Image (cartoon, rainbow over all chains, first blue to last red; front, side, top):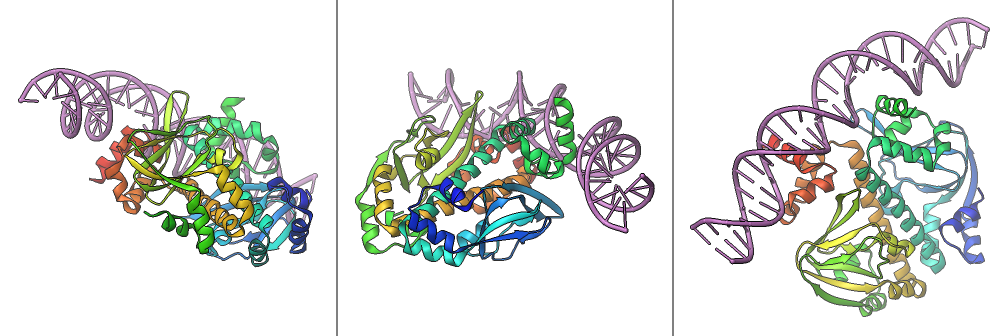
Length: 187
Length: 187
DNA sequence: CCCATTTTTTATCATTTGTAAAATGCAGAA
DNA sequence: TTCTGCATTTTACAAATGATAAAAAATGGG
């Protein structure tokens, strides 16, 4: 997934603005298992995934909970660092070797102040993330674990191939054992 | 809660931009019980609450789930209408008589394209909503219903006075019966 | 290929939460 | 005040999920 493609998926940009974003971005490769972001740290970069898959997880009282997966075309960021310039709650681990477009937040923020198209692109970016998050919250409220598993299976069957079930279970808000039960009863 | 105050809570604006937002907004009063937004409808307004309290709820398979409360200073909007100009999933009901600042989305979008400060204000707005939503999602994943109730009690004790328990239970993702049980065991 | 480790499945039992129905409390209308 | 309609609480029982342990399967390194 090309950078321009990822940017345009958020909202179309005039060529000059696009190029400005391209100029502050930098393609880097990371090995599988690399911890891209750490809870508590103020992260200074934003990434777009060209290739690979990552997970965000958070630890509290000796349990680790995966609450997000990102793959090709998606943005990776520590939400609190991005929005409030404070330490975030998430760790981000690369589940495969990844190629990422890296953007320094300071550079991006400068462009937000200089270029209205980029400011509106940033607005659209946050708005779209917001919709996704809200939909997950609602799905969580309305549906049983089994229903959520089945819609994950329908909407993103590839994920099950690339990510171990323990993480999926955690993402769905249940234990690995419960997920096994659900999988067994579907069969 | 004054409109300028609510706008500035999102991010500080230069006087001219502020005034532009003021010019497209309109203070209106609504009676208790009024349904401000309906699921499926493309909503064309955004509101800021000057006075009163509202709830957002959604219906699926004969159950109604309250997933948000808004009060003084907060923005009220149909997320999908605001972001994608499509019918939303929420109904919004006024739980008290309310005074609301009404802003036509078309006017606001025009300003996003004309005024970079307002574009960045819109960006900050979405970002802050995003943080709030993500924190709720994570709290949902990490904490038991009882813990969530108790932190609601701590963070916003006033809410319990203004909103009936059935809605609170639904908001916490549990039944009224479960909430009663939790309340009983704390005593 | 084999061994060690990790992941997934299966089984059992305890706990939590939901459903349904009845009892209680509360506020507004007659 | 009394009646009536809701909201809330309580109770009893059922269903879902969690905890734990152990077996089976898959994975990765040497």
